[in-house]
Image (tube, rainbow over the protein chains, first blue to last red):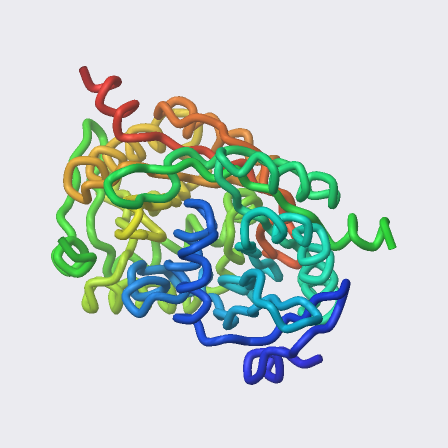
Length: 184
Length: 190
Protein backbone atom coordinates (compact mmCIF):
# COMPACT_ATOMS: atom_id res chain seq x y z
CA UNK A 1 0.00 0.00 0.00
CA UNK A 2 1.50 3.33 -0.97
CA UNK A 3 2.48 5.75 1.75
CA UNK A 4 0.22 8.41 0.29
CA UNK A 5 -2.83 6.21 0.45
CA UNK A 6 -2.18 5.34 4.11
CA UNK A 7 -1.71 9.01 4.95
CA UNK A 8 -4.84 9.93 3.01
CA UNK A 9 -7.08 7.33 4.60
CA UNK A 10 -6.16 5.09 7.50
CA UNK A 11 -7.32 1.56 6.69
CA UNK A 12 -9.86 -0.25 8.83
CA UNK A 13 -8.54 -3.56 10.14
CA UNK A 14 -10.50 -6.57 11.32
CA UNK A 15 -8.22 -8.95 13.15
CA UNK A 16 -8.07 -11.10 16.30
CA UNK A 17 -11.78 -10.53 16.96
CA UNK A 18 -11.21 -6.78 17.02
CA UNK A 19 -12.10 -3.92 14.70
CA UNK A 20 -9.64 -1.04 14.34
CA UNK A 21 -11.29 1.95 12.69
CA UNK A 22 -10.03 5.50 12.36
CA UNK A 23 -11.54 7.89 14.87
CA UNK A 24 -11.20 11.61 15.39
CA UNK A 25 -8.13 12.52 17.44
CA UNK A 26 -10.12 14.38 20.05
CA UNK A 27 -12.44 11.40 20.47
CA UNK A 28 -9.39 9.20 20.92
CA UNK A 29 -8.01 11.54 23.56
CA UNK A 30 -11.30 11.53 25.42
CA UNK A 31 -11.27 7.75 25.59
CA UNK A 32 -7.56 7.58 26.39
CA UNK A 33 -8.06 10.12 29.14
CA UNK A 34 -10.30 7.62 30.90
CA UNK A 35 -8.03 4.61 30.51
CA UNK A 36 -4.45 5.40 29.58
CA UNK A 37 -1.62 5.48 32.05
CA UNK A 38 0.62 8.51 32.12
CA UNK A 39 3.21 7.87 29.43
CA UNK A 40 0.81 6.65 26.70
CA UNK A 41 -1.58 9.48 27.53
CA UNK A 42 1.15 12.12 27.28
CA UNK A 43 2.29 10.72 23.96
CA UNK A 44 -1.26 10.72 22.59
CA UNK A 45 -1.76 14.31 23.78
CA UNK A 46 1.51 15.35 22.15
CA UNK A 47 0.33 13.86 18.90
CA UNK A 48 -3.29 14.94 18.84
CA UNK A 49 -3.83 18.05 20.92
CA UNK A 50 -3.91 21.20 18.75
CA UNK A 51 -1.16 22.84 20.78
CA UNK A 52 0.91 19.69 21.03
CA UNK A 53 2.90 17.70 18.53
CA UNK A 54 5.16 19.31 15.99
CA UNK A 55 4.01 22.82 16.95
CA UNK A 56 5.58 22.44 20.37
CA UNK A 57 8.93 21.44 19.05
CA UNK A 58 11.30 22.81 16.50
CA UNK A 59 13.26 20.27 14.57
CA UNK A 60 15.66 20.24 11.72
CA UNK A 61 14.57 18.58 8.50
CA UNK A 62 15.98 15.12 9.26
CA UNK A 63 13.40 14.73 11.99
CA UNK A 64 10.37 15.50 9.84
CA UNK A 65 7.64 12.99 10.48
CA UNK A 66 4.11 12.24 9.46
CA UNK A 67 1.36 11.76 11.95
CA UNK A 68 -1.24 9.06 11.46
CA UNK A 69 -4.69 9.48 12.95
CA UNK A 70 -5.66 7.12 15.76
CA UNK A 71 -7.71 3.94 15.56
CA UNK A 72 -10.61 3.23 17.86
CA UNK A 73 -10.61 -0.41 18.98
CA UNK A 74 -13.95 -2.19 19.18
CA UNK A 75 -15.11 -5.72 19.85
CA UNK A 76 -17.29 -7.66 17.43
CA UNK A 77 -20.38 -6.41 19.27
CA UNK A 78 -19.32 -2.82 18.64
CA UNK A 79 -18.25 -2.01 22.19
CA UNK A 80 -15.34 0.42 22.26
CA UNK A 81 -12.51 -0.89 24.40
CA UNK A 82 -9.60 1.35 23.54
CA UNK A 83 -7.59 3.46 21.16
CA UNK A 84 -4.25 2.97 19.50
CA UNK A 85 -2.04 4.55 16.92
CA UNK A 86 1.27 4.96 15.23
CA UNK A 87 2.70 8.36 16.11
CA UNK A 88 5.43 10.27 14.34
CA UNK A 89 5.99 8.05 11.32
CA UNK A 90 9.48 8.80 10.03
CA UNK A 91 9.63 7.79 6.40
CA UNK A 92 13.30 8.61 6.13
CA UNK A 93 14.26 6.35 9.03
CA UNK A 94 11.42 3.89 8.47
CA UNK A 95 10.32 3.81 12.08
CA UNK A 96 7.33 4.72 14.20
CA UNK A 97 6.27 4.41 17.84
CA UNK A 98 2.97 2.79 18.69
CA UNK A 99 0.73 3.65 21.59
CA UNK A 100 -2.19 1.65 22.96
CA UNK A 101 -4.74 2.61 25.63
CA UNK A 102 -7.26 -0.05 26.67
CA UNK A 103 -10.14 -0.17 29.08
CA UNK A 104 -8.78 -1.55 32.36
CA UNK A 105 -9.84 -5.05 33.31
CA UNK A 106 -11.36 -6.75 30.28
CA UNK A 107 -9.47 -4.49 27.91
CA UNK A 108 -6.10 -5.72 29.10
CA UNK A 109 -6.87 -9.18 27.75
CA UNK A 110 -6.91 -7.75 24.25
CA UNK A 111 -3.52 -6.02 24.44
CA UNK A 112 -1.62 -8.86 22.82
CA UNK A 113 -4.10 -9.03 19.94
CA UNK A 114 -3.95 -5.26 19.39
CA UNK A 115 -0.16 -5.31 19.40
CA UNK A 116 0.01 -8.22 16.98
CA UNK A 117 -2.37 -6.42 14.65
CA UNK A 118 -0.46 -3.16 14.82
CA UNK A 119 2.95 -4.77 14.44
CA UNK A 120 1.74 -6.73 11.42
CA UNK A 121 0.32 -3.54 9.90
CA UNK A 122 3.47 -1.61 10.64
CA UNK A 123 5.82 -4.08 9.02
CA UNK A 124 3.63 -5.43 6.24
CA UNK A 125 1.66 -2.34 5.12
CA UNK A 126 3.70 0.63 6.35
CA UNK A 127 6.89 -1.31 5.52
CA UNK A 128 8.58 -0.03 8.64
CA UNK A 129 11.99 -1.25 9.65
CA UNK A 130 11.58 -0.45 13.35
CA UNK A 131 8.54 -0.24 15.61
CA UNK A 132 8.91 1.30 19.05
CA UNK A 133 6.71 0.92 22.12
CA UNK A 134 7.40 3.67 24.65
CA UNK A 135 5.98 2.76 28.06
CA UNK A 136 6.06 4.10 31.58
CA UNK A 137 7.73 2.48 34.53
CA UNK A 138 4.28 1.93 36.03
CA UNK A 139 3.10 -0.05 32.97
CA UNK A 140 4.29 -3.38 34.36
CA UNK A 141 1.56 -5.47 32.74
CA UNK A 142 1.89 -3.97 29.27
CA UNK A 143 5.66 -4.20 29.51
CA UNK A 144 5.38 -7.96 30.04
CA UNK A 145 3.06 -8.25 27.09
CA UNK A 146 5.26 -6.25 24.70
CA UNK A 147 8.26 -8.26 25.81
CA UNK A 148 6.37 -11.46 25.06
CA UNK A 149 5.80 -10.11 21.54
CA UNK A 150 9.56 -10.16 21.04
CA UNK A 151 10.04 -6.45 21.66
CA UNK A 152 13.33 -5.75 23.36
CA UNK A 153 13.84 -3.29 26.18
CA UNK A 154 16.52 -0.98 24.82
CA UNK A 155 16.82 1.48 27.66
CA UNK A 156 15.29 4.03 29.99
CA UNK A 157 14.97 7.57 28.64
CA UNK A 158 15.22 9.47 31.89
CA UNK A 159 12.78 12.32 32.54
CA UNK A 160 11.75 12.25 28.92
CA UNK A 161 8.23 13.63 29.40
CA UNK A 162 6.80 16.47 31.51
CA UNK A 163 3.23 16.61 32.76
CA UNK A 164 1.71 18.76 35.50
CA UNK A 165 5.12 19.68 36.83
CA UNK A 166 6.45 16.12 37.06
CA UNK A 167 8.93 14.37 34.81
CA UNK A 168 8.41 10.80 33.68
CA UNK A 169 10.86 8.19 32.45
CA UNK A 170 10.12 6.31 29.24
CA UNK A 171 10.98 2.63 29.04
CA UNK A 172 11.74 2.14 25.39
CA UNK A 173 10.90 -1.18 23.76
CA UNK A 174 11.41 -1.88 20.08
CA UNK A 175 11.19 -4.60 17.49
CA UNK A 176 12.85 -4.73 14.09
CA UNK A 177 11.71 -5.96 10.76
CA UNK A 178 14.35 -8.66 10.79
CA UNK A 179 12.94 -9.95 14.09
CA UNK A 180 9.43 -10.03 12.65
CA UNK A 181 10.54 -11.87 9.56
CA UNK A 182 12.32 -14.34 11.77
CA UNK A 183 9.13 -15.12 13.63
CA UNK A 184 6.86 -15.42 10.57
CA UNK B 1 10.07 31.59 26.54
CA UNK B 2 9.84 30.65 22.91
CA UNK B 3 12.27 29.00 20.58
CA UNK B 4 12.46 32.19 18.54
CA UNK B 5 13.37 34.31 21.55
CA UNK B 6 16.51 32.24 22.01
CA UNK B 7 17.48 31.41 18.46
CA UNK B 8 16.58 34.61 16.61
CA UNK B 9 19.49 36.27 18.39
CA UNK B 10 21.83 33.38 19.08
CA UNK B 11 24.67 34.65 21.23
CA UNK B 12 28.30 33.61 20.98
CA UNK B 13 29.77 31.38 23.64
CA UNK B 14 33.42 31.88 24.54
CA UNK B 15 35.55 29.16 26.10
CA UNK B 16 39.24 28.94 26.85
CA UNK B 17 40.26 28.06 23.30
CA UNK B 18 37.07 28.38 21.25
CA UNK B 19 34.31 30.72 20.20
CA UNK B 20 30.95 29.19 19.39
CA UNK B 21 29.39 31.71 17.05
CA UNK B 22 26.88 32.06 14.25
CA UNK B 23 28.11 30.73 10.95
CA UNK B 24 28.06 32.69 7.70
CA UNK B 25 28.75 32.10 4.02
CA UNK B 26 32.32 33.30 4.69
CA UNK B 27 32.92 29.99 6.47
CA UNK B 28 32.48 27.93 3.29
CA UNK B 29 36.15 27.17 2.66
CA UNK B 30 36.88 26.10 6.23
CA UNK B 31 33.67 24.13 6.40
CA UNK B 32 34.47 22.28 3.19
CA UNK B 33 37.94 21.39 4.45
CA UNK B 34 36.39 19.76 7.54
CA UNK B 35 33.26 18.27 6.03
CA UNK B 36 34.77 16.74 2.91
CA UNK B 37 37.04 14.51 4.97
CA UNK B 38 35.56 10.99 4.75
CA UNK B 39 37.21 10.03 8.04
CA UNK B 40 35.54 12.94 9.81
CA UNK B 41 32.13 12.10 8.36
CA UNK B 42 32.37 8.36 8.76
CA UNK B 43 29.88 8.26 11.63
CA UNK B 44 27.89 11.45 11.26
CA UNK B 45 24.25 11.62 10.29
CA UNK B 46 24.93 13.36 7.01
CA UNK B 47 26.82 12.77 3.79
CA UNK B 48 30.35 14.14 3.38
CA UNK B 49 30.50 17.31 1.31
CA UNK B 50 31.72 16.51 -2.18
CA UNK B 51 32.21 20.07 -3.39
CA UNK B 52 32.37 23.48 -1.78
CA UNK B 53 28.88 24.03 -3.17
CA UNK B 54 27.64 21.42 -0.68
CA UNK B 55 29.20 23.45 2.11
CA UNK B 56 27.67 26.67 0.76
CA UNK B 57 24.27 24.96 0.57
CA UNK B 58 24.57 23.81 4.17
CA UNK B 59 25.60 27.29 5.33
CA UNK B 60 22.75 28.88 3.41
CA UNK B 61 20.35 26.60 5.29
CA UNK B 62 21.91 27.51 8.62
CA UNK B 63 21.79 31.25 7.86
CA UNK B 64 18.12 30.91 7.03
CA UNK B 65 17.54 29.07 10.32
CA UNK B 66 19.18 31.97 12.20
CA UNK B 67 17.06 34.44 10.26
CA UNK B 68 13.86 32.57 11.07
CA UNK B 69 14.75 32.00 14.70
CA UNK B 70 14.75 28.24 14.31
CA UNK B 71 16.87 25.81 16.28
CA UNK B 72 20.34 25.94 14.73
CA UNK B 73 23.93 25.08 15.51
CA UNK B 74 26.90 27.26 16.25
CA UNK B 75 30.07 27.25 14.25
CA UNK B 76 33.07 26.33 16.39
CA UNK B 77 35.96 28.72 15.78
CA UNK B 78 39.48 28.15 17.03
CA UNK B 79 40.35 31.40 18.78
CA UNK B 80 44.07 31.35 18.11
CA UNK B 81 43.78 30.20 14.50
CA UNK B 82 40.74 32.30 13.71
CA UNK B 83 39.10 29.61 11.62
CA UNK B 84 36.07 27.37 11.75
CA UNK B 85 36.98 23.89 12.93
CA UNK B 86 33.56 22.34 13.37
CA UNK B 87 29.92 22.79 14.29
CA UNK B 88 27.90 22.05 17.40
CA UNK B 89 24.67 22.89 19.08
CA UNK B 90 21.04 21.97 19.41
CA UNK B 91 19.37 19.99 16.66
CA UNK B 92 16.00 19.48 18.29
CA UNK B 93 14.16 21.26 21.11
CA UNK B 94 10.92 20.02 22.62
CA UNK B 95 9.86 22.95 24.78
CA UNK B 96 6.79 21.17 26.13
CA UNK B 97 8.97 18.52 27.73
CA UNK B 98 11.98 20.75 28.48
CA UNK B 99 14.37 18.56 26.56
CA UNK B 100 16.66 18.99 23.61
CA UNK B 101 19.17 17.02 21.59
CA UNK B 102 22.66 18.17 20.74
CA UNK B 103 24.86 17.30 17.79
CA UNK B 104 28.45 18.17 16.95
CA UNK B 105 31.30 17.46 14.56
CA UNK B 106 34.85 18.68 14.45
CA UNK B 107 37.70 18.46 11.95
CA UNK B 108 39.94 15.42 12.33
CA UNK B 109 42.99 17.60 12.91
CA UNK B 110 41.40 18.74 16.18
CA UNK B 111 40.44 15.35 17.57
CA UNK B 112 41.79 14.02 20.90
CA UNK B 113 42.72 17.46 22.20
CA UNK B 114 39.66 18.19 24.30
CA UNK B 115 38.16 20.72 21.89
CA UNK B 116 34.85 18.93 21.48
CA UNK B 117 34.49 18.36 25.21
CA UNK B 118 35.18 22.07 25.73
CA UNK B 119 32.54 23.06 23.16
CA UNK B 120 29.92 20.62 24.42
CA UNK B 121 30.44 21.87 27.96
CA UNK B 122 29.53 25.38 26.81
CA UNK B 123 26.52 24.06 24.90
CA UNK B 124 25.23 22.18 27.93
CA UNK B 125 25.61 25.29 30.10
CA UNK B 126 23.63 27.31 27.58
CA UNK B 127 20.93 24.66 27.47
CA UNK B 128 20.43 24.46 31.21
CA UNK B 129 20.94 28.14 32.01
CA UNK B 130 19.36 29.93 29.07
CA UNK B 131 16.93 27.43 27.58
CA UNK B 132 15.61 26.14 30.88
CA UNK B 133 16.09 22.53 29.86
CA UNK B 134 15.71 19.61 32.22
CA UNK B 135 17.15 16.94 29.90
CA UNK B 136 19.77 17.19 27.17
CA UNK B 137 20.36 14.12 25.06
CA UNK B 138 22.81 13.08 22.40
CA UNK B 139 23.14 10.05 20.16
CA UNK B 140 26.07 8.56 18.30
CA UNK B 141 26.63 5.50 16.17
CA UNK B 142 27.82 2.57 18.26
CA UNK B 143 31.16 2.50 16.44
CA UNK B 144 31.82 6.18 17.16
CA UNK B 145 33.95 5.68 20.27
CA UNK B 146 35.29 9.25 20.13
CA UNK B 147 31.86 10.83 20.24
CA UNK B 148 30.74 8.56 23.07
CA UNK B 149 33.81 9.56 25.03
CA UNK B 150 32.97 13.26 24.62
CA UNK B 151 29.50 12.61 25.99
CA UNK B 152 30.87 10.71 28.97
CA UNK B 153 33.50 13.34 29.73
CA UNK B 154 30.74 15.95 29.74
CA UNK B 155 28.86 14.01 32.40
CA UNK B 156 26.27 12.34 30.18
CA UNK B 157 24.95 8.90 31.12
CA UNK B 158 24.51 6.01 28.72
CA UNK B 159 20.86 4.95 28.50
CA UNK B 160 20.82 2.23 25.85
CA UNK B 161 21.33 1.26 22.25
CA UNK B 162 18.54 2.17 19.85
CA UNK B 163 18.80 -0.53 17.23
CA UNK B 164 18.65 0.50 13.58
CA UNK B 165 17.33 3.88 14.67
CA UNK B 166 18.57 5.97 11.75
CA UNK B 167 18.92 5.40 8.04
CA UNK B 168 22.03 7.21 6.86
CA UNK B 169 24.76 6.61 4.33
CA UNK B 170 22.76 3.81 2.76
CA UNK B 171 22.05 1.72 5.84
CA UNK B 172 20.29 1.46 9.20
CA UNK B 173 22.55 2.38 12.11
CA UNK B 174 22.47 1.43 15.78
CA UNK B 175 22.79 4.49 18.02
CA UNK B 176 23.95 4.88 21.59
CA UNK B 177 21.70 7.23 23.55
CA UNK B 178 23.15 9.47 26.26
CA UNK B 179 21.58 12.11 28.42
CA UNK B 180 22.34 14.52 31.22
CA UNK B 181 19.69 15.90 33.57
CA UNK B 182 19.56 19.35 35.07
CA UNK B 183 20.12 18.10 38.61
CA UNK B 184 23.21 16.19 37.46
CA UNK B 185 24.61 19.19 35.63
CA UNK B 186 23.99 21.48 38.61
CA UNK B 187 25.79 19.04 40.91
CA UNK B 188 28.76 19.00 38.54
CA UNK B 189 28.98 22.79 38.63
CA UNK B 190 28.99 22.98 42.42
